[in-house]
Image (cartoon, rainbow, N blue to C red; front, top):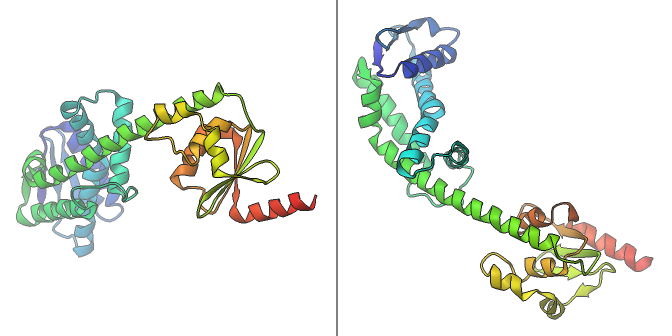
Length: 284
C-alpha cells in the first residue's frame, strides 16, 4: 500500500477525485481517503504493470493539469508582482503553450522535453523507493530541479506577454492613425510573392520610387522599429478604402499584422487569383 500525506485538505481531496476518475472502472475502489488526517491510501498490491503505469500517469497529470497553474500564479504574484488575475491568466496560457510545444520559436534555457523527463523520473522514484511519503516534501525536494526549469519557461512567457502587449498597443496606435487619415486610393492590390508589389485599381504596378514619395515620414519617425517601410508605411500613408492581398501564406506575421490594422478593409485571396484578375481587367 502507498500512503500520500498532505498538509492541505484541498490537495488531498483533489488528488483523490482525480485518481478515482482516472482509474475507473477497475481500480478506483483501491483509492481511499482519510479526510481527517489528509492521508490518501492506494492499495496497489494487485496492480498489474499497466495499472501501475496508469497510476503514475494520473499522478503526473494531477501535477501538470491541477497544481502547475496554481504554482505559476503564486510565482507570478510573489516574484514578479503580477497580481491582476487576467494578466496572470494570459501569461499562464503562454506558459502552457510553451510546454505543449506550440511556441517552438521561443528560446528556452532547457528543452521542454527535459522538464517532462525530470517530472516523470521524480514520480517513478518516489513510487519505487517508499510506501509512504509527504506530498509537500515531494514537491519541495524532489521537484526542485523541475521548478528551476519551470521558472525559466515562465520568464520566457513573461517576456512574450510583454511583447504581445507592446504589439497590441502598436496595432491600436496605427488603427487610430488610419482612422484619422483621408484615403488616397479606393482600392489597392498587393501581391506577396518573392517580393511585395503594389498595384492600383487598374492593376498597374506602383513603382517603389512612387511608394517612397507617398510615405508619411511621421510614421517612420514615431515607430522606427515596428513600421515596415516596404509594406505597412506605404499602406498606412495611402490609407486605401479596400485592400486585396494575394498570397500563398495568409498566416505569415506581416500579413496578420496588416490584417489586424486594416481589419474589415482587407480581403485575402490566393496568389493564383491575381493573374486571373489581371487578365479579366485587361480583356474588359
